Image 1: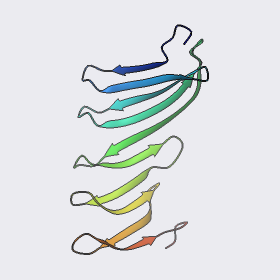
Image 2 (image 1 turned 135 degrees about the horizontal axis):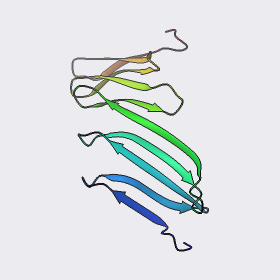
Image 3 (image 1 turned 90 degrees about the vertical axis):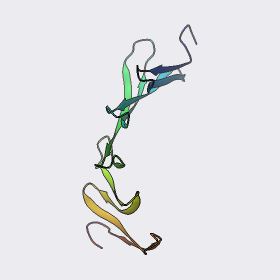
Image 4 (image 1 turned 90 degrees about the horizontal axis):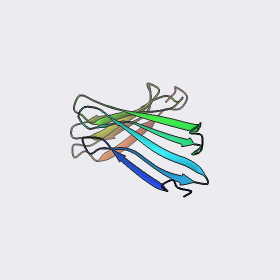
Length: 125
């Protein structure tokens, strides 16, 4: 479009996708990916730029974190508290926190089937 590629894909030396972008309504819309040394996704940043000037018009970033077992356990969007999920065993969901505050807790039977859920609202059960 106007001499600029409509869509672009960029990879790093590991072959990991670093950025994908396209033109939308005259703006360059892109998603940028960050990884740790184990190849796990650690950040996703979305941007909208003016393709003529390169001026950043909008952006949003979300960061991911992992527990000791290497399982994803936290996501933190821009300007919002982190959402954490608590797991056990091979990844069974035990509960979730928002900003460090418990919001839901699951109970399970011996076969790991959900038997109940307890929700918290505004710091209360």
